[in-house]
View 1 (tube, helix red, strand yellow):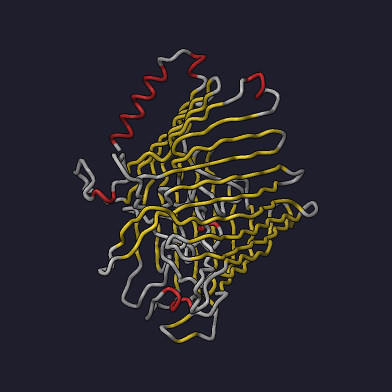
View 2 (cartoon, helix red, strand yellow):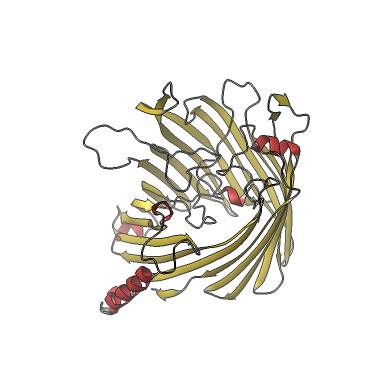
Length: 452
């Protein structure tokens, strides 16, 4: 924390010495977000021998922005750690793998058109550097902000926007370090696992085209994304050996967010996934989602929804396992993160039937209450024995938000998971404890030190 204090002092002194007309183009903000969690089966049911976990994690950020002639700049430095992770008198991290100080974002955006043209409503720009990629409802591309470390990409994005239409063309190419020769990339990270659905590896390269159009109410879009994974073979001793070339995976489909009448909102999407997965297996997968939200009055909204993600039946030679790419799974498939996160739940896919609601109690107090019913589209095996039930259980989620001040927010949550033997088999867990619970309290402080 001393590093952050010194950084603030240096930035403040430097910015105060700038002329007023230059200073007005800077933004300087921060964030301290603490989250105390009681995990009694979060991610996966606990075995009968395990006990619940209790800890507090913290994210601390410094955000610096600048907007000038044909140029935008933004950088976010963050530190993520668990209280007590370091000794109270230590001057360095006790475990190098847990060092949470990092550069979350650092990008520049260059306007390729002069202001005389951009003032007419046309915008053409190139955004380069470390950045968050967020589109639509963050189902496939999102910043995963729920995780304290969040998600970012090292990429270049060419952006064209005019009259409610936008076209973004993005690309990324990853390497482990500066090399004198060769292009092999080891995408298996240290520390936190990469990707969703237990993918466990980063892409070597990524390219996408996003086309979006604002509607009278809402928006519609189409996404085509290709991510490539370094080929590998496995030695006789089980060691992974990287080889030249890549396996390419293509995901494409439409998204729609609109209203059907005055009070009924509709959100729908459908995507196909083809090519080869990260292990070189032929891929033929799909997903769709449809949800509605009816505004009963200004205090309460409620609506049902369904998600379907294809998976593999026992003995399948072609992979039908849809992977939701680089989105925000915590937002869609239950607050307890049983599906499409690093814990894994087998290759069988998921059907998620849910009822969501949002309510406002006062000007400062609001919340959500959701109930999910999960099923496997395919038969689940317990060892070599197929189970008759495809039920993966159900989950109840309750979240309360209290806005004490513009820069101070509190969020409390409770979730309960009703497990089943089929879920335990899918996750490869036996002798589980009855029921699973998760509760947390998050305090988010976001001061604005300097703004336009």
